[in-house]
Amino acid sequence: INTVTNCVGSPITGQITVNADSELRLDSSNNNQNLCEGESITPILYTLGGDATNVNLISPTGADITWLTATVNSGVVTLSGTPNIDITTPTTYDYTVTTTGSGCAEVSLSGAISVTPAPSVALSGTSAGAITQVVCEGTPINAISFDLLDDTDNVAVQNLPPGLSYAISGATLTISGSPSDVATDTLFAYTIEPINTVTNCVGSPITGQITVNADSELR
Image (cartoon, rainbow, N blue to C red; front, side, top):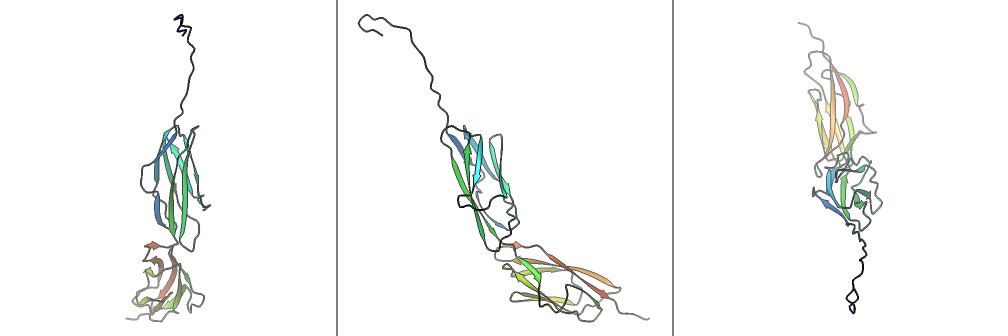
């Protein structure tokens, strides 16, 4: 515009493109979880917004989270996985989810998965009896001793022959007794499942066999 002559010239145009910042919203409210070793996490859900198209997943402290995966489908991010790394002490896996795809500011959200070691049980090296035995009805077995490991404080024992019992003393489980009441030669496949009653974690069971040969009868 020339304000003296009041003449107006031809306009010129330009463009300014504003790229949206990335957005990331936690939808499932379970980004922090407590698990027993070997349990899968409950899926953790996020929603992408703005110009975000994908995410990066890292551990700020360098924890091994190779078992944790992030998948993106139609703007929904799902974290899933099972911490199958063998641990002997409680372990926390921290993680951070960071958006990608925007040419502007990206967004990060964090969480942590705390894992308690699974309890375990193993045949004691000083056990008088083997884990598998063959005995006659009414004859005592050689007592079988097991070490309770990884904070095991209880067990579930199933399918012992009649007449046998188990007892826990300290960190040792002992199975003993004299099998009875079998009409024919019978194989008992028993299981011992380790339990931590504080954490409610249950470990993998171990199995053994006791074959009880029936006494002869004459009628």
